Image (tube, rainbow, N blue to C red; front, top):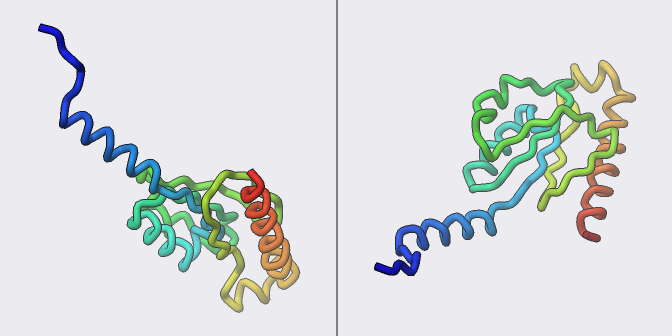
Length: 132
């Protein structure tokens, strides 16, 4: 007997996977291994997004995000935002900066560089992405 290849279950599953792919956003979280960043990563994943966590681990720790590493929609990148970053993302949350007085008083110049250069680099990334 001739088969058309149409199967309602396969069609529905295929439609659902396409729908998830088209609505899933890829989001960059700088400082994602910090206290606030790790919680934001959790929230974004729970909302169905792909999350790229960038952190240089100056104050953040891998312990904050260890439970997220097995998630296929979570990616970790060791990166210092004082240097440019070129990745394709739909949104950027820039949380990279030492927030504790102990840390930012230890190296105020690096803290300022992280705040200023990090913000400039993330704005530059966003501008590059908007021209694609």
